[in-house]
Image 1 (cartoon, one colour):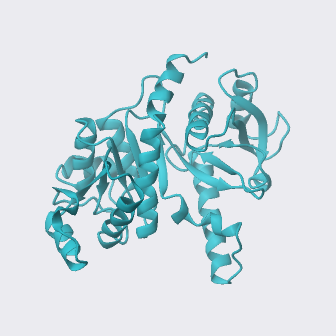
Image 2 (cartoon, rainbow, N blue to C red):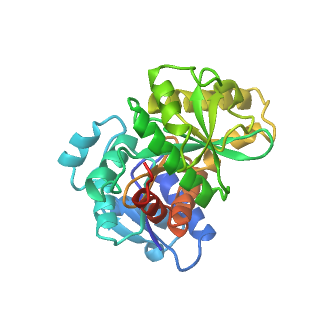
Length: 316
């Protein structure tokens, strides 16, 4: 497998991204190849500085950089020689089988939609994050910011996409789907949640188990927690903030250490015709390594193909 890495993406790029690629190279099979996409001179200088031959990786030169605060569509249109644009061209032409970046997340989502496109039947792609459970299990929450404004049928589809991801990556059989809400009763929540509940409750496409309150996020009430991107992004950033506060006060134990974003590497973009993973902007070398490894796992799990097949057989 060939995995493309946006070397210029992230707050600590390019040092952290290149160092992460070196760590990932040791974690992956020797037959797998990591392609470094970015300013070639900078990449080569860094490799030489740490004593590695410049031919350790395949390097694809891309002189332009999409900044973290740039408008996604405008940046991709006006910067065709950026590392993100180059990565998506390679993914579309199948020169690489996966592409990952800790850079501008909006540009990554838009780039995926305009290059490889969405899977037929997908209303909106979504992104997901892992949520550790007190009993040692692992759940996921989606969406975490891709779709701040959404509709009930989109949430329904998020549940399906999350179920497939949970089965193939977390290896959970028949994952439980919960709808994040302000109460467990059927009639609770705003109009979005009430309508989504009615669509989900009799579903044969996934195992819907009802509403989940935020206080039960870590109590293994559901394997897949569904919400709109506005809510999910707030939840995720609150979790990150709590982890940093606990870490600062030396209160991190085995459970809370699992909230460290570095452990997960990034968030896959589910619903597009390719393996695309977005990393955290503050990614360290360890996080970059795990982002690359996650991209490899998604490819090997054939997640995109299974989403495509599931939507083809969509019962709704």
